[in-house]
Image (cartoon, rainbow, N blue to C red; front, side, top):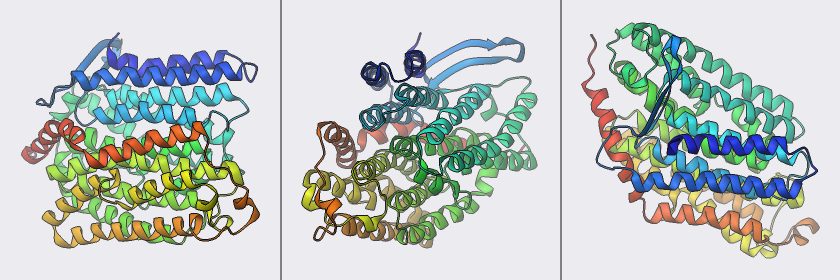
Length: 491
């Protein structure tokens, strides 16, 4: 079994073992087994970096075996510079989420931990799949564990939120299935994604396929105006669910644009590029303004995620190496920062059981260590230089200015809006005198919480101070993708 198969199936195998352990009879064993499984899964991904060849855009660590031979469907996995860091990010965030739920989750612990481990394996499968049907199976299968995480361990309106999440994302994906079947028939019975990249398609077909993919990927990102499910889901989801949803699941849609929409329908992508840019700028500017008026911390960070993901799609559809690389870097940075923001809110919620900003004030007086971490993550969310949040946004803004000054100016406004809503929230929650007895009685973070936040802090600072390892991996694959899109001509 190759490294990619191990990365996909190891967490799933541990998840299935956890389900077999029974409900709450073996809680301690369940927690340690979940942590062991997540750590092993992350360690499996590390040799990928050592063996990755930077100078080539070809797929690496390729594995291929027949799956459904009658329809020429293969179990086909591979990794390139576009998907590489997303695999490592998924495995890393899974470790953090297991640590985050260690003491907080007290009922159905084995099912909770198993859901995250299985979800992690399925998401890695999405990023590695080189067969169209295999991609679709992994892509849709991720809905099931996330639906359960929201619906079982969520807040008071968890059923509504879980159903809305499932319905939005499933309906969008059905058109994608139609597109995949069409490509299968037109390619002479092949689900190989690389074969689809080389197919000459007419302008009308490219437009239809582009929007079929857009229906699934735009909802998943989520782009404005199909973003309305995200705040509701984040508010109701447990802390770990929000962290994984923001850090990794939103990236499935953005990844789909690079793997399917742009290379399969390159002419349509160029034709509709400005349309995507406008939607992205609305997300960056308008949704940033919406975030400012939120009174619920989770809802504020949820709208912040929509704005930050707007940078990703903006960077992609400028069709500039700096913009596409910047979008990819922003995906990874947002994974670290958004997970840290949601987990920080979770630390407060575990103590006070309120997400309302008005319930807090002066937290820095009673939780100084925690406030220091929160300040770092808030600054990263603003896009402060030397943090992960700055690198991708800066690259996209530079690419946008080169593309069109007005587009660059509107994109840069996000730095102002981001600072406004993030720092205003930080001021009201953490600074000033203690406002009530609940805040007065708060205890600072324990060892488990410190480890969880410290790991994310290291990731945020490392990426901010030394982004080169991230950009070097992407360079060849991004150049090859843009060359393919630029050279494509209608048949």
